[in-house]
Length: 532
Image (cartoon, rainbow, N blue to C red; front, side, top):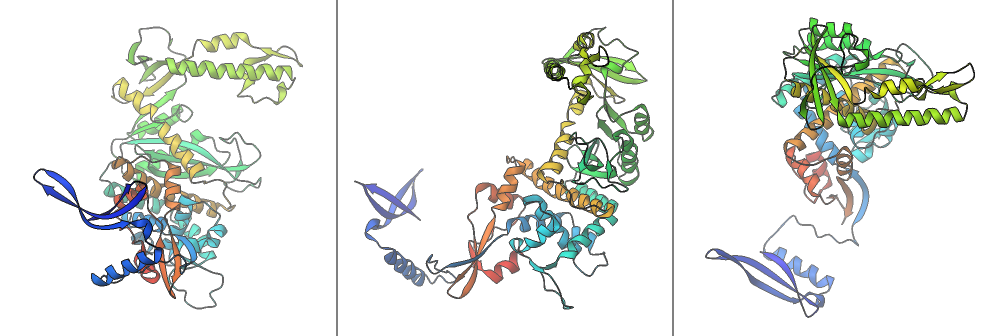
């Protein structure tokens, strides 16, 4: 049965309907007609509902009167339910319970992960926002044993030290659990390097001044190298001093994969800036295969324009040659040719403007100065010969490999490098790894381990959404979980948890993670006991 409002000549009539099957057809039958609803007062409706509850002996129902209900606080329950569920899947308690600490390391990590996913803050900011997540901040314990969900600020900082000390073990535990959890194997590994900037110019053993990926030169930084699998899930990472050349990080990454993860047949995919001749030898000596970019202009032993090109896809053609005992695909892409031309025109325009402003000496060496040459000690002119030489390479690039994949497969695997770039953007922007408010090497390392774990938890949720064909974005996930709130309310001297309405996306997240949907209204203590 269900209620239905019908409009007749501008008036609203309430009826209780019932669906009745007659043969192959389903018809709606009126069970009760309440007449014109505009004739009923709010008091009439309340009396009617109370009477129906008594007649049908329905207990445990609390009548909600907005005038009598007082909201005491509004808090989030969604992020805690979700993080608890994913931590359980990865058996994080099993890993951390062996830690000999006087507090719950896993719970402190959960708090920081919750914060990273919905609203990144400093550790002090997290502490000051604990009540929103259902915890109680405690300034001084005065020697007494703290209750469940009571948290001290120094526990958060000490947890970073624990994470730093156990970085390799945590990586391996997460990797092994994921292989078991998703019943998958890792046979394709992408490697890339980025820089993480700090809002300081102080330096130490890892904080160094260096060339930032964001083209900043006035901040100290560290270099972060990370291996990522075909599902955009991080496998491992390493931290290097901020002045380290990115290509020098590669050997460590390959040796770690070989030693710690017992991977079988693996294809390492990386861009041309990473793969020097020595790095290619490292991959080959590990019995791995590789697919790497190769600068066309640096090819000395082959004329890229000779020979027949074969169309591999619309607007893309290739030809294959042997180069340094490996396969080299020379690719021409119409789309890339357009991009190359547009990039060059921007640089030329930049060069022209700098010439007009007599500001050549301050130009970025990798930018407009590329197309300028010195006429005398004071003046520069456009280098038309260099510009014309570059034009002939528009749209061409190289891919070198030792695999036996066909050209289309090689091209597809190389083009998936965007997955690595997207992952780093997520770590740096969405999870707001920067700015980092720690300065000692140990705390920096611990903070990045925490961000690494946060991303894995987030990515696990995304993979579940993808598996269930549910559209999402990072921002949609963040805002959706932030809005999974409840109000602590007082009604007739009793405390209740009143859950906010759930939209379809929120319901989907709870369903795919097999989390029971909280009731709309519950006794507050019962709510906390069941869901926290």
